[in-house]
Length: 159
Image (tube, rainbow, N blue to C red):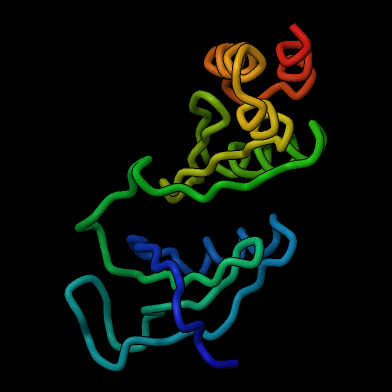
């Protein structure tokens, strides 16, 4: 399978393949593709180590690069996963946080590799798109949450 014309490159210290496998097991329309081994030693690894792995997360092509500890992840980059229910929101949130990740605020969490995720119920985005007081109430409710509570957002939308 040819590499995508445009893909997201995600830098990992050394666990790109493990991360890709976790994402493929967690999210639909996700898979692990080709793995590339280092043709020679490099600053953070040895010849034969996994250097890069192609993977897809929820239909988005990515390349994981085992570049070493020089760069760390930040919230400036995140995967945003839209969900259709509280059950789906809980499933993804719990998979990420329960696999060595950590909770954050407003629907954000980090996986054990430090990559940020936004687990965002569609009802929240629909409220934001509605604008006005409905958006304001939903936004203010969201600001008090870690994992998004769908019922609380729906109640806020109604006023």
